[in-house]
Each structure stands twice: as C-alpha cells, then as structure tokens.
Length: 311
Image (cartoon, rainbow, N blue to C red; front, side):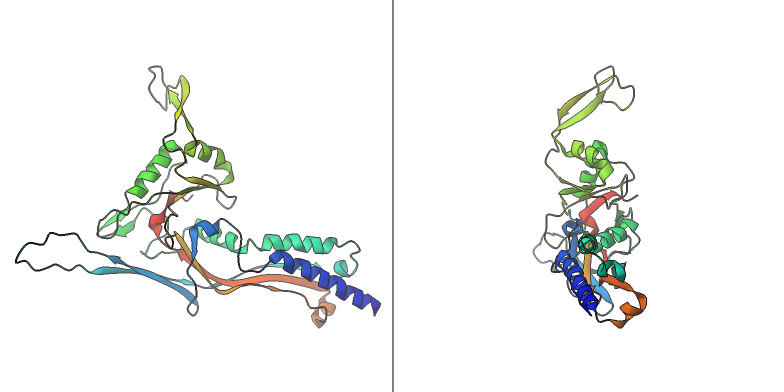
C-alpha cells in the first residue's frame, strides 16, 4: 500500500507541474496575437463572419435634381471548427520510480511547449493560404475582386528595399469597393529567422546603395557601395518568428482595432486532460497520457491589412 500511496503522490506532483506550466489557459502565447482577431463565439460547427461595404459616392446636389442612392455589398464566410491537440504518453513506471522529480520537470517543459498549440495551428493554416476568404479568394492573392476589377496583395519578390517600397506603395493604394482609398499604413514587417538581417537593414537607419562607375545607383556593373539615410527608418516594427517559411515576408497594417488579416474563435478553449491515479486503464496499459485539446475555427479576415510573399 505504501508503494501505491507513493505513486499517487508522485503522479499528483507530476500533474501539478503540468497544470502550473499551462497557466490559466486563457492567454496563449505567440505572434498570432498581433495579427489574428478573436471574434468571439462560434455558432454551431463553424465561425460565421461578414461585413457590408458602402458603395456610396460623393456627388454634388444640383437644384431640382433627385438624390441618387447607392447600395451596399455584403461579404461573408464560414470557417469550420476543427479539434487541435497535443498529446504525451509516459510510462507509469517512470513516474512511480522517479526519485529526483525529473519527470515532473520534463512534463513542465512539455506543458510550456503545448501552450504554443494555437500559435502553431494559426500559422500553419495562414501559410497554406488555401482557405477562401470573405471575398471568395485566398488571403494572399493577385485577384481580390473590387467593383469590376481586381487588386493584389501578393509579391513574388524576395524581401529587399525595392520589395519593401513596392509593398508599402501597394497597401497605400488599396481602395474600397466604391473606389475610394483605404490608405492602409503598414505597421509591422513579419519575417522568418533567416531574413532578420535583411528586415533590419530595410527598416533601419542606414541603407547600403550599390554604385556603378558613373556614381549612379545600380544592380549590375557595381564597382563600389555607400550608405545613405533610410527614409523608411522606424516606419514598421520587425517581428521575427520561426513559424514562417524561408524566403517569405509579410507587411501588415495593425493600427486599427478589429481590422486584422486573420480571425479565429473557439468552440472549446484548449483544456487539459490528465491521468487519474485511480483510473483502472492505467493499471492495464501501464501508461500515463497528458492531452491538451480544444476546438478552433479560423480563416482570412481583412485581406487589405496584409501584403507579402507567401512562398
């Protein structure tokens, strides 16, 4: 009996270490918090989102004329719920005969990694760029429909000063459905770890310029280089994340509350399922299972808030 009691105490200590490392399960860490908007409750088996676009134009009223009334265009999408989880299995004998508490420490580290469950899944779906957004195309696309024409937030160019300038210009030029300017202002530049140096150079104080033998800026026939003041210094905040694929980059305008390129909602927030020392299945299988599981729906939000290279 003393062995059983000792085992129960050790399992309780292991469970406590796991739970304490998970925290309140209310706030999940990760860079997704910057660009993904939690839009609240999920309705049934999916997340229903939408908005209406004002098609109104500014006109001059002349005496004797009737006013002209413009309509509104509705956009919407439904994103299905999916269960996401991370699970660990541990031999019962390792816990029962652990004299040093190493098992509890290991579970604590595993719980810390498990808390990345939301960040990882949102980045995985965003990078796949296969979900259809509110306007009927993927988040990053060259064919976002706008009142009989299309707009593009897709770059095919590696991050550079020129690509950065082109991205800023494209976002500043995005228009509403009625042709009026949105004037999006990128505030953040997201890059993978391997592009951090380029991102810092693009947004930093100095810009390296290659020169040809006439002293003009050039990309070929370069004979020397110099540094000039970067006019874009401080325009955007660089966010470096290992979640992004090599060679990709995103400019995002995150300046307006509720206007985000990505949205999500929980049907069930991730919750922990822990082994019970009195569970008979543990005796049969001699295994302990730790699970963090939740239901999430997610997808593109406002495509106008993002521009970049997806692959």
